[in-house]
Length: 231
Image (cartoon, rainbow, N blue to C red):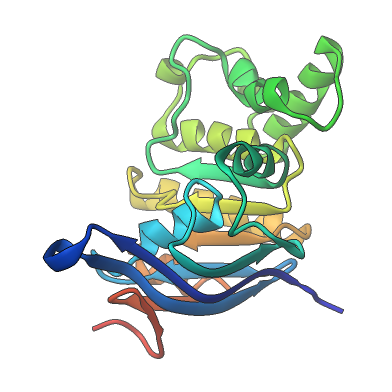
């Protein structure tokens, strides 16, 4: 039986004061089940990035509640949020965010250096990183640097890095935004494969063709969840 991995109730995020107040999120209610693959869509300014930042514990809501894995994280302080990020969330960004002078293997090992899941030896960290690279089909590229790889390969390294700590949730923010059509589909196929093996994935995308490959689409407009496709 599925459980709510994510539940948000009346989530709001307000920037500015007085006449300059902006309601980036205006009473969001949504759930994400364990093992689900959800796409989040909406026009520019709809609140997608703000929602992703809160779901990823990169920011706190102005009001409302957010439960992740049964824990209310909406009231945690910065240090507590950082601990949740390190232990429970894997991030995939549009710009890859790889260290340019480090190999794929060392980039994937990086989250393990900050992990509080227990001290691991260097050989254990390397083994986990190699397994993550194998999972995205890059076992033979472990010692290549980002400038020696295509954009699609760099994003696969970023996905491996997101996997290496065995997170509860993978958040992918426009993961295909810098890629051509073929590479974009390869990345979505990898996400599908991870989902089939039980991973929970939330993906922000502007591309309807990619979003339709998720199990469910959440549409945002003006900081609210709306029914039906944008347009």
